[in-house]
Each structure stands twice: as structure tokens, then as C-alpha cells.
Amino acid sequence: MILRTLVPAVFFVLVSLPVSAQQPTLQDVDPTAIQKRAADLMDKARKLSDIRAASAPAFRLTATFSFVDKDLETLQGTYTEVWVSKLRWRRETVVKNWRSIEVGGATGSWLLDNADDFPEPAARLPNVTGMFPPNSSDLVFASIDDHKETDPPIGCAVTAPDSLRVQSAYCFDAKIGVLLQRVSPQFRPGQLVAESCDYGSFQKTGDYWFPREMVCFEDRHRKLDAKVIDLSLNPTTDPAIFTPPPGAIEIDNCPVTPQPPRAISAPDPAGHFDHYHRVDLSLVVDKKGKPQHVRVIRSRGTPLDEAALRAVKAWQFFPGTCNGEPIALPIEVNVSFRP
Image (cartoon, rainbow, N blue to C red):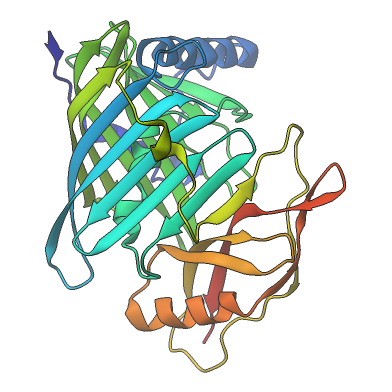
């Protein structure tokens, strides 16, 4: 059985508007009731579709994807994930001549890309197929907007404004309960920019309904298309695939909430620029406080991206700590180009 669903564009617009322009549908309902209902919607969707839950069986997932690169060329690739548990998994993303491998084990995880310019859309695949926010996410919901006139009826749980007065939303099929869309605004000077992912063509594998089609947008422009071509439970796997690849960057596990790295020196790129720009990057700060595995996650064009990469690779940090001991941790940073 296949469930095909389409999220109306109204939900994408919903969280792209300034907070002051939004009118909560359930504004007269007790905030505690809103929070409980939103949490219930998320919990039901997780039980239906979270194939990485602690009680879920091992799986192998294979997907194909496509995106338009900076040179307006359409690139295609494959994503493969083998999951045994949160302490034993492997992901591999291949597109053109680029290859990225992630391996998770009992003591940590390891990252290896064969090039510094691994395409940012392709790097999104683990997050896109993951669908849900981390269990540790402390989401506070402000409203639930019901749209009974759509087919299927849909309910969107909208988070409370954060410190920058922006919100996120999670939209669910009101009849079945699966997650159909997530929208996460990003703040840039003078505007809110929404990033959304739509999920459709749900098929049942074992006890789980999982989407076979995923489409992500940025600034209302199509950013990434992915299709799951195989999802197999309890696959036969070679234990060797979980061996960390030579040269990989290690990220330590921490049983408690770690203290994040702190920048000692993080200057913006020198030079004069006509307009304000911001490039967002991800990196791993190793045990010695050095940036490793620096990658652009939100591009502003090749020249600015390259300048941002050079700047961050020269930054210095106090490393993150776990129970007072230095550990390697991933973080996200931004580099500003000011006129």
C-alpha cells in the first residue's frame, strides 16, 4: 500500500511571514493544551516513521537524489545507510567524483570526505532522511493550525518565536499521523528565509510507514529531490563496513551534555564588500582546538564561500569538553562579509 500526500503551499508561506503577521488558530486554547497536542502529534509521527528508534530493527536504506549545482548543472547521486543501532551505523553519499563516508561506533563517529568542496545539497541527505528533530530538542509550541479543507486534512504545529522572533513548523497528516512537511526558517538581515522538506509516497516496511519521495526547498526554490529505492529490514552486513576509514575525522561520544568549543580568535575575512553577506559553515573542533572538516552548509557563491573557508580554517578554539576532558565536537559557525 502506498500513501501519496501533498502539502499545500500555504504551510510554506505560514512560517515565512513575520511573527507579528501570524494569527494562531488556537490562540484561545490553554498553552499547556497546545504543547501537549503538538507533542502528541510528534510522538505519533515518530512511532509511525522513525526507523532509527531504539526499538526499531536494523535496516539498509538506499536512495537516489538530484540537485542543481552552482554552475546550474543537474547532478545525481546515491545515498546508502546501514543502521544497526545508535552505536553502530554507516552512511555513504556519492555524487559525481565526490564521496562522503560517516561511521558510528560505541566511542564516537568518524567523517571522511574525499574533497573539501563536497556539495552542500548532497551533505543534507542524512538530515533529510532523518525527518525528525532530535529527541533532546526542547521545542516549545505556540499554535496548531488545522486545515480540514485540504485532502488529506493537515495540522501544523508552529513553534514559539525564538530570540530572533522566527518560528519553525511541523505539518502532519491529520488522519494517519505521518509527518508531511517540516519548515525551519533561517534569519538573514532584513528577511526570513524558510527551508522546507516535503515527505510523500509513504510505504509500509515492517511496522513503519516511511516516505519514498522527499523534496527540499530553500527560498522557495527547489533544492534537493530524493527517492528511496530500497528499504530492507534486518539486512545481512559485513562487520568490516563499520570500521572507521583511514584518515577520517573522529567525533567523540559524551554520556552527558558536553561543553561546546569556544573561539579564541575568529576574525571575519578582510576586505571591502558592496553588501552584507553571511556564509554558514560546519566544522569539527578537535581535542587541540583546531578546526577540521570545514564545510559550507549555506552558500553565498564561490568567491565568498572560498574566502569563508580560508577564514574558518585559520580560527583558533578552546576545545569542547566532556566531564572536563577535551573532546572533538562538531559545531556550526557563520562568517560575515560587511560593507
